[in-house]
Image (cartoon, rainbow over all chains, first blue to last red):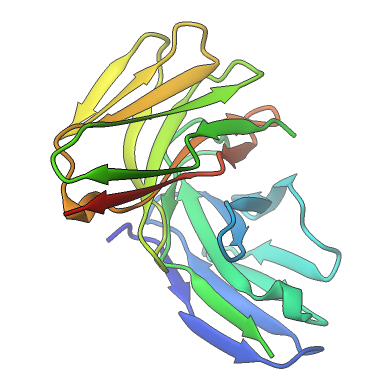
Length: 114
Length: 111
């Protein structure tokens, strides 16, 4: 158990809809990273938050947004969903703001857009 | 952004054999992380390396941080069926604000 909790584990929704994925980092970790993993693909970095503030952005679509709350949990919002958004979405938590320490991943949310 | 080149892309080996995979970057990395991912699960951290030349073991796994700081190697000795999965290397990039992953090595262990 990595200590990182993601909910829901599975999500099935229709095109055009909006969903929210939730991540609770490990106790004491201040950074949350979000990644997208499409079928047979690697992990694509989306966005990073540290202590409530956005710190780095990767290849995140404008239809996607995220935030980190005062209790440090983070939510990834995906709107106007398309079939191609179907993927595994992972969050990872790190103690500090920088990516040069160990990152621990949640179990992921499998999103299926139909 | 920076990219990590991981090879081989896939490997088929017999149970009991040793395995070696590597990761290279065009830029210097200060940290190398190796992860294993089982199907449908999140990546699990195997080994973290923080110093050039460092050699670190975790059971049957051994990883090395290359002297040039642009590469890293992961070796698995005496492979067993539960070693099956995808192995990723990762390192900080973008002024260390991102954790970039290699494309992964899919390992299959044949009985």
